[in-house]
Image 1 (tube, rainbow, N blue to C red):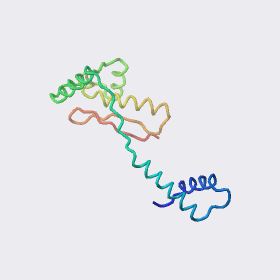
Image 2 (image 1 turned 45 degrees about the vertical axis):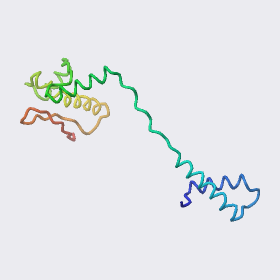
Image 3 (image 1 turned 135 degrees about the vertical axis):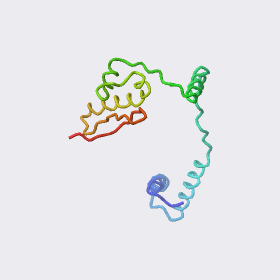
Image 4 (image 1 turned 60 degrees about the vertical axis):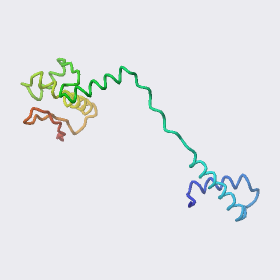
Length: 145
């Protein structure tokens, strides 16, 4: 093992505590060997992985129900369309229906959150929504002048 800068500092501290006068080469080598043994001993000590937190049975059942409904193609997200959300969406797409809003709920919420953050930071970039041919919303970043 090579002597790093950090190990050199530790070695110098240990030698200054141990030796009253300038240490001999033998004392330096002895102290360095002792330090290496301690470093290897620390590295060889087993540190177990932290245990995962206990998950309640109800939470696990809800997660499994979401997984099943996702594979069946059902909407998983419980989205409540408020007037504020509807107004935000209609600034981009005036004729968008509630079904399309529910279908693209995550993208709309991400765009709204990003837009609030960008306005608060007075950013030169803005997040916009773009509707593709399948009726899905895509998020796009644009630089403003």
